[in-house]
Structures are given as C-alpha cells and as structure tokens.
Amino acid sequence: MNGVEFIHLSEDELVNMSQSVIVLGGYGNFGKRIVENLSSISGLTIYIAGRSALKAQACIDELSSEAKAQLSSFIIDIYADDFEEKLIQLSPGIVIHTSGPFQGQDYHVPRACIQAGAHYIDLADDRRFVCDITELDALAKQQGILVVSGASSVPGLSSAVVSHYKKAYSQLECIDIAIAPGNKAERGEATLRGILSYTGHPLKVYRNGSWNKVYGWMSPRVMDFGDKVGKRCLANVDVPDLELFPSDFSVKNRVSFQAGLELSWLHYLMVMMAFMSKIKIVKDWSIFTKLIFRVSEKLKVFGSDSGAMRVILTGNDHESKSRITTWSLYAHEGIGPYIPTLSSIILARKLLNNNEDKRGAMPCSELFTLDEFMAQAAELGIYADEGIVCG
Image 1 (cartoon, rainbow, N blue to C red):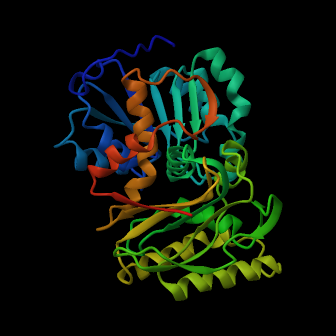
Image 2: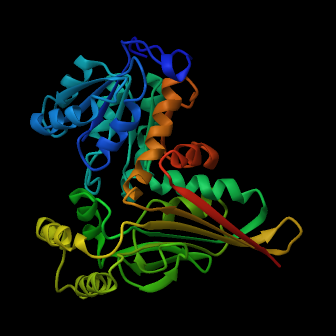
Image 3: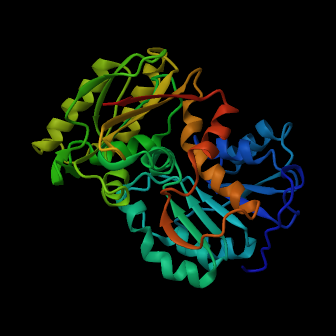
C-alpha cells in the first residue's frame, strides 16, 4: 500500500509518526470537527488541508493545546492541475474529503487518492456521487485501497440503524427517515448549496412498490419528534438512501426521506421556492447560495440549538405479525453538526487500528454498526431512544 503499513496498537499508542491523515476542507464546518476528534490519537499526523493558510493555521491554534496528534497545514486546491502531484508527494495513509458541495463534482479526488495509495473517505450526500462511486471499484481493489462515499448521516448512519433492526423483520414494508436540525446549529455554505441545487427539481423515489417522481423540498408535513425538539416541518430531500435502500434492504413498499427547517415560516418559504422552480420561474436556486446563506446566518438568533433524526421501520416480524420500530436520535446545545462527521471518524479509526479489511469502492452502507456509532455519539452527549410496537 505505497509503503503505508497499519499496525494494531492501543489507542494511546495507535500509530507511528509516519502515518498521516489529510482532511480536505479541514478548517470547514465538518472538517474541523473531524480534526478535533482524530487529534486525540497519539503519534498521528493530521494535515488540515485547503486553499487558505490563515484558516488552516487558525484551526491548528484552536486545537493544538489539547491535541496528542501532530497538526500541520497543507495548502492545496482540489481543482488545481497539481492536486494529484501534491497528494502523491505527501503520500498520506488516509484522505477524508469534506470539501462540498459534492453535487456536480467528478471523481478526480478519489482517483488521485487511489493513485497516491491512500484510503479515501468522503462526507458526500449527493445521490449520484455516492451511488456511482462503485465505478472506481476495480481500480481501488487493484491498488488495495478502500474508497468510501457517503460516510455521513446518510447513508452511513441511516444504514447502520436499518441494519441493526432489520433482523427482527421477515419483510420490511417501509423505511421512513427524517432529519430536523436546530436553527441555531452551525451550518456550512456548501451544504446549503447542495440543498438548493435540487429544490423544486424532480426526484426518483420508491413508493407503492415502484419508482415514482416527487419534487425536492415539496410534500410538506409536520412530525412530532418529542423530547426537547417537538414538532418540526419536513419536506422532500434528495439523498443516496432513496436509491440504495429499496434493494439493499429488500423493501416492499416505500423508502422516504425528508428534512426541514425549524422556523416554520422559513420552511414554507423554501417550499414556495421549490414550487417556483417546479413551474420553471427559477431554474436553479443554488446560484443565490451566498445571498441566502448570509440571510440564514442573520436568522440564527431565532429558534433553538436542538435537533433530531428519526428512522421508522414497518413490516412483519418472523411470526408474520406487524411490527413498527421507531428510532430517534437527539442532539442539544448545538452539538448536532458533529453527527455527520462520526461515520467518517469511525471508518478512519478502524483503518488506523487495522480493523477494516474491505477494499474497493462503495457507498457507506452497513460499514459499521449502530453500537459503534453510539459509542462515539455518547461521548458528545448525543443520545437515542427507541420504540417498538408489535401487533
């Protein structure tokens, strides 16, 4: 593997000084949280990578006092002609790609990682980017590299939840997933751009046992998440789960995924924007990302810092009785933005510990267990609740 050797040690002695992780976008909304977590590993070198030396250094200054790992900046542009050359020269063990939005990106970053002999993990939520990553499978296997796309809330965490509970079912009828972040939670411009890119655009979903068309950020409804979160508005979002889960989990009837904004008036403004795009008044809302992001930042004084995720499974158990499982995840005090980072952190730690032997290119579906996720989440004060109804 290009001279990178993984050895099994205790966490405090985990890696030797020659091992390194590059976090592309390492000072961004998600990247800095990944760096923060991995910096607790003694002997690891973490490169905080991006185009801004000032931002990289600010991140190092913020984290260095508590860090056991060596933190360094790495100035690199993923779109520059010398990107692959710089990556090969550094020869990292793992590259974690957080520089979204992934909508519209090609696979030049994971290809460069394969050429550099580096395992690749990304936080992509774009349906095509994640689902089509398998086109790199043969090349990754040839080089003995693991390439994982979608190591985030979806489909990383969501698939772990479904996998955990599916063994109680003889037949899954429906998988319904919803995410409701708090309005005060920190968010990135790239995430917003990704959402706006499909607002009001047609999405292919599995419903009533066949593929049907819905529209992004439409079909609004309200769900009561309970706990401190309460009722939140939801609408259609485009995620890899919609394409992966019907076949991965042999779902008979429906797979749905919705998310929403905490401020109901702002949520329904987005629904109106989606309708305008549907009837072709506005072709692409993502061109207004910077303006909308600035406005959304000013609105962070409203709402709460509490968010939730819910997964509902319905079907029949092994005695042919109906069964409904409801799993809810809660994050308060602004801790929610850590959730999308935990899947990539788990995979990176497994690779560093030599506890992951899969090779090839694949979506992040069922690559870790729910117990592994909750072990990381609990350290942050994130907790889950479940409810099971049998009939």
